[in-house]
Length: 243
Image 1 (cartoon, rainbow, N blue to C red):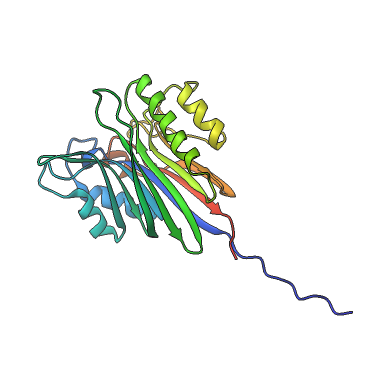
Image 2 (image 1 turned 45 degrees about the horizontal axis):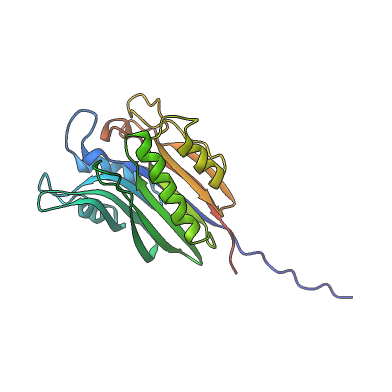
C-alpha cells in the first residue's frame, strides 16, 4: 500500500516588534540629535516600531518624516497635540503594509492629552493588529486609560494576533493596570528600560496575544543609553502559520 504524500506544514512567520520613547530626539546629554535615533533604529532592525514623544514642529524639524526617510519605514502618525507650534505624540514605523488605522482618545480630565494608534498590518500571509500608546503619569489616569484600551481590544475580538506596546509609565508592579493587562495577555516579562543610562523601571512594555512565542528584552547598546532617556524594548514573536 502506498503512503499518502506528506503535507508540508506552513512555516510560522517570525516578527520583531519594538517600542521606543525617543524623548523628542533629545538624548541624555541634552542634545537634539535625530541621527542618533535613526542609528538606534538601525541597531534594532525591527519589523514594527511603536514610537512615543515624537516632536515634529517645535524645532523646525519634522522628526517623524526624517526617521521614515532615513530608515525606509512607512510612518503612521498619531499626534496627541497638533497645533501650529507642536505636532507631538505617538507614531508607528512599519515594514509591512498598513490595512487600517484607528485612533483612540485616552484623554483624562485636564491632564496632558494621550491616545493610542490601533493599526492592522499585513505581515506577509498573516495579519497583525498593533496598538501603540503612551499612558499618563498619575495612577488614576493609567487606570482609566488601561480600562479604555481593554474595552477597545474586547470590542474587536482577537481573531488575529494582537500586540499592545508603548510607554505605560507604570512603575507599580502590583498596581491594577499591570494586573489587568497580565490577566488579559498573560504574564509577560517587562525589562527595565528607564532611565536609559542605568535602567531601573520597566516602563516600556510589549504584550502579544495569539502568537506562538514571545520573548521581550531591553536593547542596551552604548548608543541607546545616550540617544534618549528610555531604552527600547524589543519582542521576538512567532505568528500562527497560515496556508
